[in-house]
Image 1: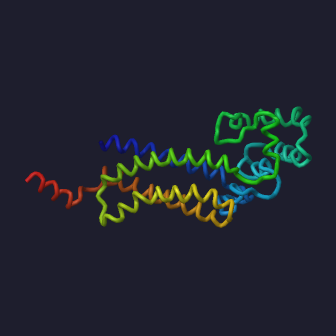
Image 2: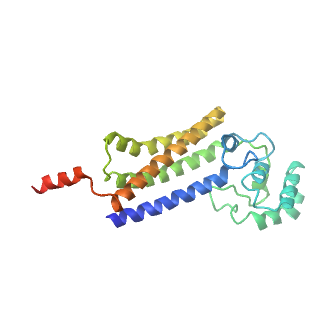
Image 3: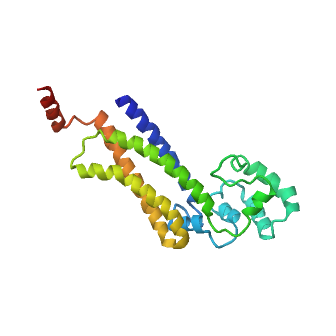
Length: 238
């Protein structure tokens, strides 16, 4: 069982690390700075109020995807009205070369840039993530993350932690954090400071997950069996 639990924890831990890297890459830099900031989250959910989604992306998380001259030409096209003839002769080949690998419409988490109509949608004023997209991402997050929290929580349930309230809090906290995180996506649209709630929910989930992961691995492979557990076993044998 230790081998099974360890394999599960290692894979889940690696998945969490990749998810963190992906989220950081997706949301950081939207305000033109470096790192993931409060303003980055506000822009992601409510829009920048400055130009289009395409401009915001090219100036933020997608800035490294295109050479500067190509990005500038693409932004100029957007600012001049995003006409169809220029799209056919210049923009479509550029997107096919630089963007189609990820934005071909096959990934529901990424905006499709296949065809003029889809590209035209991201040339409108940036109003942030729309409600339908939030609903779609919310149900994916809730279903997926709850399952891996259940796995980690089940393994952590075998750990010896005293006082018991610490164990109870560690097991319940990530679920509460998940609800806070997802709820805040919608609340930010109403009142920008709720972005701090998004950051707090993500931090709480990460800390509680990390605590359960470390304690479980330590007690399985490094720590000695607690005296209370040994005494309990002796009593059962006796």
